[in-house]
Image (cartoon, rainbow, N blue to C red; front, side, top):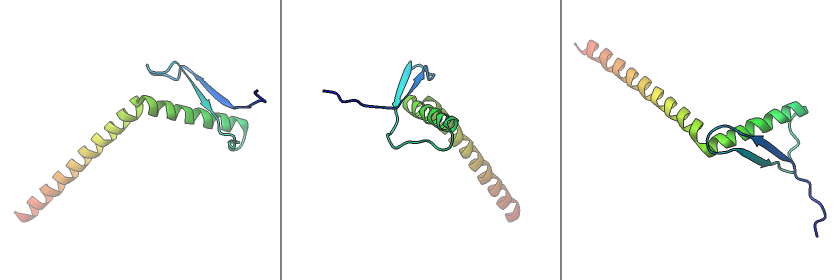
Length: 91
C-alpha cells in the first residue's frame, strides 16, 4: 500500500552532447533554495548542467587540458627567461 510520496524532480530535456537525451534530478527534501524562486531555479539549472558535464566528461576534460597546456607553456617561457638572464650575467 502506498500512502503517498512527494518528490521534487528537476527535468532537463536534451541537456546537450551525444550521451543524454533527457535527465531527471531528484531534489533533496531539505533543499529550500536561496532567495527567490528564480534564484533557486537558476541554481538547479547550474547544478544540473555541472552534473551532466561531469557525466559526459567532454567539457571538463577539454577545459582541463587547455589550462594545463597554457600553464606548461607559461612555465617553460619563465624558465627560459631565467636561464637567459643567468647566462647574460655569467658572461
